[in-house]
Every structure is written in C-alpha cells, then in structure tokens.
Image (cartoon, rainbow, N blue to C red; front, side, top):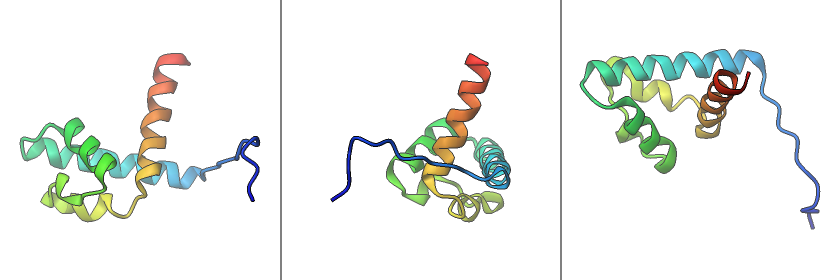
Length: 86
C-alpha cells in the first residue's frame, strides 16, 4: 500500500520543456489561422483528451498528440507562474 502522506517528486527534462512550448505555439498559430479561439480549443483538448478540438491544419492535431496532456498543463502553468510571480 502506498503512503499518502509523502509528496511525490516530479521532474521534467529541459529538452521536453522546449519541445512542449514549441508544440503549443505551433498549435496556437494553426488554430488562430483557421479562425478558432485557441485558448478554448486547447482547454477543450486538455480537459477531454479528444483530439478533434484541435484542427488538422498544418498538422496541429498530429503534433499535439505527440505531447502528454499533463506536459501541456505543466508548461502553461510554468509560463504563467514565471510571468506573474517572478
């Protein structure tokens, strides 16, 4: 049985961070070009896991599926925290 009183440690490699940031940027651009609200579409994808929230324009759907959804959340949160608190 796992002890629930201990905090788990999670570490992401720097290369992964750069790749995830690039994927988010490329998907954002593709969604914008197609006239979608990129924030709403990316949130829909992250919350549901349904890739149809992401356009296939410029390979954005295939690209975002190469990244785990938790990595997307982590990158977005890191970007927000760095911009607001640091």
